Image (cartoon, rainbow, N blue to C red; front, top):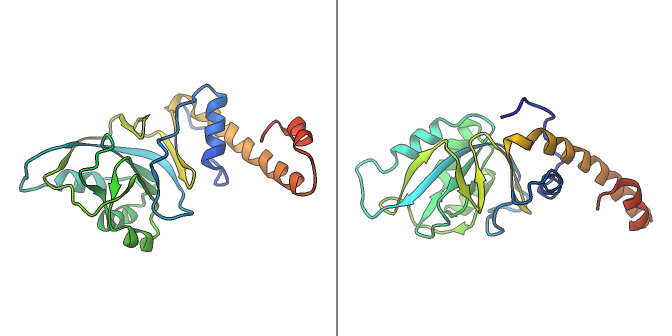
Length: 216
């Protein structure tokens, strides 16, 4: 990862960050639209902690050991990124995993498969982004095959430590080699769009604000 630069402003949206990544030549950093928040208005921003699942057809005496070790080892501020290849066999995340992640200080979860206990996760206020909900447990259906390694989630390659931002519009991943440039551009874009919004509401034309700010 490059040396730390400007911190992502809390006002930055995924749309603004995606536009900034486009501007630095990274045009494929937005996950599939199927991955959506369980609760409208959720937002998660932080460093990726990655985990890979693969299908199995057998049970073990300790089916949750790898998940327990992974979640108990989460650093504060991380966004869990669960890659399953879009598997529909089961859910990958639920209420108790969410509670444990909250206890570790995690910022949220992004999953290209399903979650469960949706109403209970919403009650906890924990940001979970998934392809949907399904009540089936992953035991004897899928297993963790790796953690803290590059994974593909929602069509985007995610490396451990990559910056992840998720909100109502979707999920954006910022590769480490362009992070400083993309974050600085996104922060500036958010500031400019605030001025543009104010001027448009005051009666300015789109043509005039585009000429001044070059953002729309």
